[in-house]
Structures are given as C-alpha cells and as structure tokens.
Length: 211
Image (cartoon, rainbow, N blue to C red):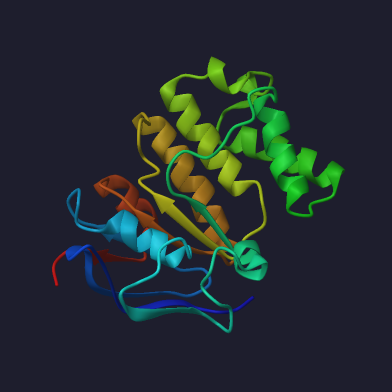
C-alpha cells in the first residue's frame, strides 16, 4: 500500500478536559515522525487516534481510503502499534509467541518461524528464545514487546516511547531494526523522550502540546 498517514488538526477533549490540542502530521511510506513533548502533552493520545483506538473530537485522520477504525480488519492489517504493554501468552516461549503472532496475521508457518528467528537475532534475544514471559527482565520484556510488534506484516508502525527501560546498546539495536522497516517502505510514527533515538530515526519531529 502506498498511502500517506495524515492527521489534520486533530484534537481530543474528554469531560471538558483537553487531552490533545490541535495537531497535524504526515508520514508517507518510508518516512518517520518523532512525537516530542513533556509527559501529559498528548503524545499517547495522538498515537491512539492514529491507531483507531480513540475518536478525535475535531480534525481528521486518513490512511488512503481506509477507515481509521481498529474494528476494521483492513485497517488493522495495515497498522501495527505498540501502545502500552502487549498481551503475552504465559505458556508460550518468546520464539513461540513471535511465530504465533505472525501466523495469526497470515504468515505461513515456516516463514513465521524464520521471521521469529530473524527478529530474535536483530534484537540480540537469541539466548532468550526458550524463555517464558515471566522469566524476562524489565528491559528484556521491552525488547520482546518490540519484537512482538515487528513480527507481523504492516504498512504503518506506531510506537509509544520504545526506548523505555533500554540500555544505550539496546537502543541502538532497536533503532537499526526500525530503520530496516523504513527502508522496506513502512511509515513510522513514534513518541519519544530520547534525543538519541530521534536523531537516529526521525525524518522530522512534531512537538505535541504547543497549540
């Protein structure tokens, strides 16, 4: 799909409280946008709007002809997101989790296994392939969450502070993995407090909460 993700002066108010001031952005295939701003400025709310999880109070969001609605399967197939902790199956190992997610999105079993192995290598998680979710540290869980998000096909990737709980060397691995997805034609929008990640990955920045 060769469609640009666009938000035009999107805002959100709940019970007369403004959660997101009017904000605009564009992310075409192969482009990345970093959402910057202090805690509470509306970065996560904007990501939820882009993911079809939150209806905006005003403004518009578009991704080609697709309806921006998480209940629309075509939209879900195009947009992957890590906004909050993803669900892990307690009785599946990390490698099994990754393969299962790929299969659930239509990836053939052998390909899903290969994708899982490749992702584990990209993020230096090979040694944890047979671990269960409750056996992972905080930083390992964050890397596993990113891997779980990347294992399925997508055209647009939305990430909420992917740098959380990561050491500097791990942050570099994540940036390289995300850069590969940009090179493959994905659009990426990510909220971050990391100057380093923004410098490594962002094509441009949008400051949220200044309207």
